Length: 156
Image 1: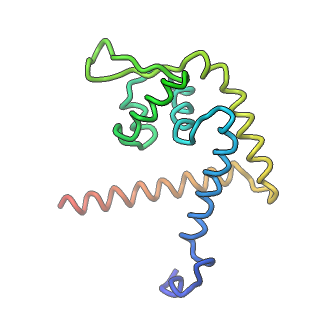
Image 2: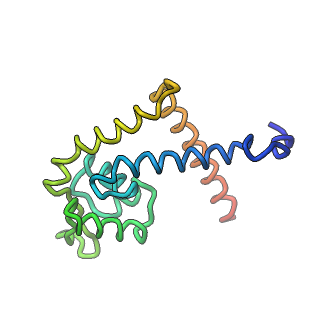
Image 3: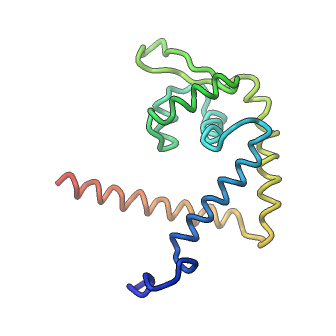
């Protein structure tokens, strides 16, 4: 790549296509999650808990890359809606343990099917989802690697 990429029109800029794709994903998930009155960030928390239930808030925060200040309101809303419970840890009074409710366990398949339905509707290009996911994982690893390098150089 060279500097000529900055001479391209808006529609030919990588950042613009990434921005539009992120908005598209957000809208897709919004449609799929609407019947369950869940937001995309709430769904991400549920995904983490479906995989590893009964963990402290910090574990979820680290796993999702969300600050605890961002995560706590999401958890509180999930608790109010009956998707999760948040209780003080018996081992560390400063920590809270988050667990799924029966509702969350029961609705997992229905939510997953709702998302699958939306994904299938929009995949008219027959994109290889597994390859696309692997490419995104590789890209995110590169972002993390360069972020660590930038953080280390700022500390010097």
